[in-house]
Length: 321
Length: 293
Figure (cartoon, rainbow over the protein chains, first blue to last red):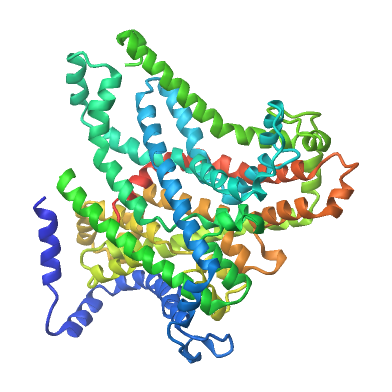
């Protein structure tokens, strides 16, 4: 508790007020090899991540490919006005929030349940086999997952409609129906990621002191009671931190999967901010307008992530140590 | 511990219900893959009629014959191997030296550089500026663009840096006593020690390269350069919309569904082959990377 903040403070106070350049030159002379090692990564970051940030100014410009980023004329907030007056963008924003909200509500508890259940399995071979299988979909590409979903939900040959046929239900062309898009998308992402996300919680459970369980066994506690009275309270800090981080990443809907699964007939429930940007910018060539939508997205995401990190850090400091 | 007799009756029930639920979840994870594999081995007629549920119906390998006879399948498969292998090597060439330098306490400006890395994880310029930047750099439709443009990733860099930071400084001091310079310390001392962390990062790179789709679709125009995932996407999309292809299929022993399933199987197999190695390392990797900033 005491050492963490202290180190940070002394480091921030250490900023030299005088002779900074000279000091830098001295360090460069002494540790030049380290700077050589750092240089490729540093240049990469500047060229591929920081230069695009400079390019973001086109959100405030009438961008023309021929003039380039710097020479295009400034037009202020015009793109943002168009953005907030466009039904397409507002719909994408609403969809993003709705899809993240439902993914969070249904998707967040799943890996916790899984971790608790895995922890209760005593048969080692069974446990490791099951874990191997449920982690697997995380490593499969979204194209393949989408391919499986498209095949399984197809109206003629798909297994879902086949099974519905057994119960006398009429076939549904699921992927063209706006009301089915979100359940299918959210279900797919949970199916793909829940197993993998349980790892964090399993690690937290592994950190619980065994003596707690030993004394509970002596007191005659059942496994159910131990799960509720020991395991869950012990991993609660991890759960809360993961929840905060997850809320911080709210806007990061996996749009790659959406691009693969949506179609014009489902845009009304499926189109999120990033897919909107993709269509307007990369498909229709409205770079400046799409960049404005991207900037809005990035700023909101930044505020959310920083807020979440700050809260998570404060929380972990007071409750974990 | 594994002896059920040690537990009371309610415990036994609890354990059994729990195993049952886990079994259901595991089976529901596995089932779609089994379904696709069976579909790929069924006749086109059975697939179209929706007869395939668990095992192949009218077992045939015609769908595979069709796919393996497509030149573009082999071209894209080759491209994916190229992007995966050289992309991972490119990433490691950036990440290992960069992460090592960032982990050294004596690096002047270390806090600033680390903040620079962390900031890229919080704020992203977005799709459009990244795309325009790639275009301005002349990296559209180029192998080099794909290899270099996605070489560094903040998460992997921080994961590796955290590992290097965790190595006791006595290793470095001992090497320094023997007169080693920074390059030698990295190469002879830290690289061998960091093998598990490097393997973890390499596997993360391999998987994300193998699965990479979106930017390959956006940046590559030339068909000869597209990776398997883009080809897979094209095929599934065009097969199911292309009436002409549908018409030629009436008498064919394969169908849109079986052909799509066959490509999916061909593209999963390499992942399954490296998966045991991935599994060995990724749990460690997650925990190493868990401590961000």
